[in-house]
Amino acid sequence: MFAVIKKELKSYFYTPVGYIFIALFLAVVSFVFYQYTFSQRYLNFEYIIWDSTVVLTFIIPVLTMRLFAEEKKSGTDQLLMTSPKSIVSIVLGKFFAATLVVVVALLCMFVYYGVLRYFGDVSLVEPLVAMLGFLLLAMAYISFGMFASAITENQVIAAVISIGFFLVISFAQNYTSFTEMFALTNMFRKFPQGIIALKEVVGYTSFILLFNFLTMIILQRRKSVK
Image 1: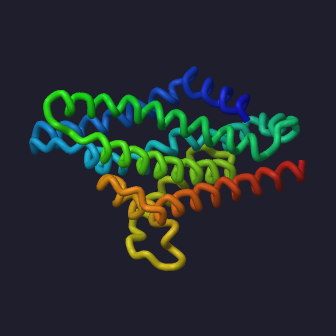
Image 2: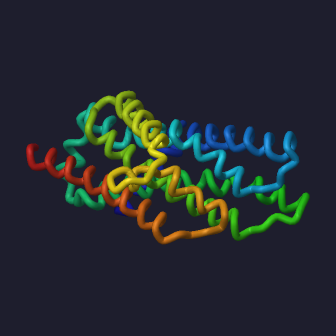
Image 3: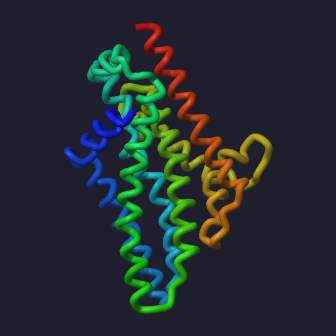
């Protein structure tokens, strides 16, 4: 798994993909930060994080669209399928590599907290909990993005599927027995308040496990055919 993580991180940072992701993320965060601090004079870092979650809908597919679709289109997936690495290690390696890119972006984002801290008395607990929720939301998006990339060989189609799905579930505001685990933005609401609720953590974890598992099934079926 660690070999896969290393390979994927190189593909992110030896190409523009990782830098584009971080640049787009920080551009949105910078805009939100300006609106809160300079326009509204509001020193609340956790709600800057809250308003920045919308960008995940459009930039997570930048990370995930190529993970399997590119290899399938170029034919290098045959090497992947016949390698001694297990399907589990391949999927988890790619998943954690994409997650690490998000972690790097979050660390860059934390600079804004330092600015707020310098000019005022800003709490640390709520921002850290909000960043945890943001990371869980991003990981959930990554897991679906990988699934979308696994079912097509076209990166653009994978990105469109991901963005479409993220937009649809963003409107799933009413919790029901079926849609509860898909209302990902609803699950995030308590984190900016400094609350780590077990229900939300389990919800994110279940979503992540579900789509990582579905991705593994797709790859296993493809491997058995080959």
